[in-house]
Image (tube, rainbow, N blue to C red):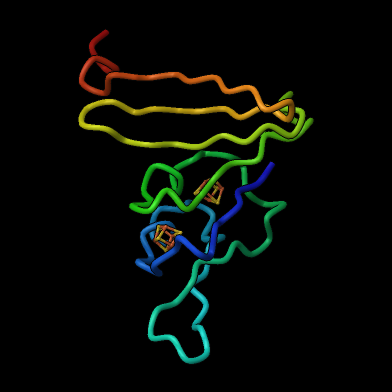
Length: 109
Ligand code: SF4
Ligand code: SF4
């Protein structure tokens, strides 16, 4: 399992690097650009905590659900809308599944 970072969306804010518990995401300077771009080093060390997905303000990070976690190559993405956390899984056959979690209710019990 590992993440994929869309370099076209990344604005180099560094938030993903700050929250990754494994220190796996580095900010790479870009020639001719004052902004850095996030890059994952050692993707094999990513254990899928999804902190970086939740922190990215540009939704530039997606999570690859490989066979090792039963995902068969589906792609997980995250979006926050108000107090809702929206998780979407895009299957390899083009299907979508969506799970919405009300974060205000999530720790209620
Ligand atoms: S999913 Fe977790 S471990 Fe993997 S790169 Fe993102 S923050 Fe780091
Ligand atoms: S949090 Fe998102 S926008 Fe910010 S550096 Fe990471 S990938 Fe780029």
